[in-house]
Image (cartoon, rainbow over all chains, first blue to last red; front, top):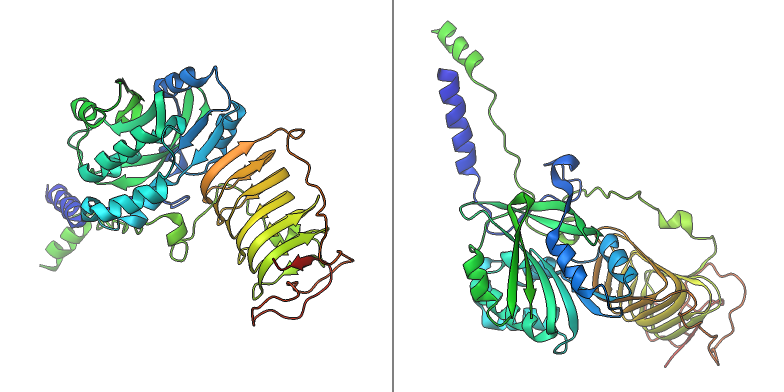
Length: 229
Length: 202
């Protein structure tokens, strides 16, 4: 009885003493907090399937990948005959905005977008956004989506992922590696405190400049969203 | 009393020790504090390079055009252009290159800012930082590399074969082991020029 109570108190105090991170906590490759089986998973993706269905009949398209440089994504997209542009968006995001509060600074927002999404209007025929938008507070998110709307061609598509857990105090975030047009390898990179809740209704408002949104609820409590410009 | 105390000690579970979360920075920034384990086998660049390769050493800075007819290792700074006809260029871990590069093959361990055109293969290692557009037949990427730019894969036949420069300043001769620099490079760090690679000032 005492032992059980003590265990509960210890567990609670250890949880309470862990300050919720304002910025993401990265596991690092081989960081040792979780083992490979727990962090890496290959799974089917209907969002990915839809995204590549829309562009499969063309070649030579410009595709932007915001997850940084990975061999599998480069191999797959270039094997389809497309030209791949990559940006390590999260790395730049946290380098530019060390604190979340800074994400409302209009000067920093402008600088960030000019350094990371500085492309001519209607350059891309598709953007793999993955889960990077979830790391942004509303002012930066709005500005980023405004910029994305400018640099993609009309009738082109974005693939974005958002967490479906609305009350979580900490959510994992991932890197995504394309296996083929219908499946991806999801690799947990760390955890973070959600900056805002992005449910379906919020997302429709956020992407109001886009023509349509299509939602797919998937494993890992992730929603895949196909956004059409 | 002591028995009671002993009993409590026995019943109490070991204190839960929660590992402090790693600092919230990217692998590039935490590399001094955390040992990262790559999923890919570690390749030592020293074992891959032939001995007596033409080298721009880490204390050498070159401004201008570099043409070479043999393999070249750049572990210093280069600002200008680099062309290696049918040879491999290696940017060492200390290399900082601000240059347009044309070569048969490139291995990058350091930092490159500029467009790259390769007829065969580009190999981007885990600590490399590359900003620019790549045109290549093949690409190999290690996890952890930073890249910003575009990748255009062209089939081997489609990559324009790099022609020898029309007028290299100094023809490349035999092997050279020492640092190589432009003949009139203005840096006080640069040692006397060695034969092997031609580096002409713009």
